[in-house]
Image 1 (cartoon, rainbow, N blue to C red):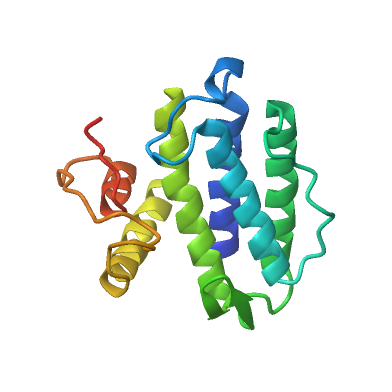
Image 2: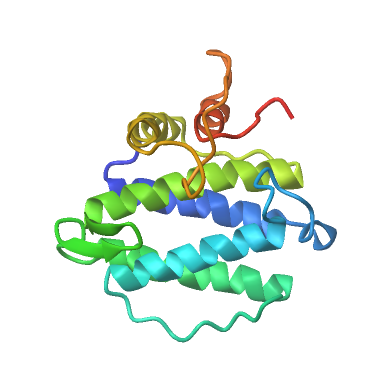
Length: 190
């Protein structure tokens, strides 16, 4: 695992960005394991989340430039810009120690970082599956994600409005990222 949670997050974002760059022109409307989103919508979801958490963490962001159906190059650029803003916000002195008003309520900055890390890991799995690529996240970071997700799953009951579907089974010898995806409700057999 990287030396700090912020550098680990930077590596996760870099891996996700590589997946975004790997999306072929004909794959932007391909379905993802998230039934409500195709590839472009999934990337747009990450952009929106990065922008939201960057703002929560105190970053100044330009107005969103994405329309309802952005072109692939716009999505790629928006991902890079919002990721850089979010990373800079997490790197700011004292950012992880202060309490911020996240979409789920007031949380320490360190928890906001963990939530965004988990979001990128599981949606990285989604994106990789949708475009036929492998998500090459650091294994130690994914192992941390599994432990963090177990705590979340225990605290957040499944059902309407829950942030993830009920956990699904995964073989113990499945890759760590597959086990994380299953824990957060993905069907890893498909």
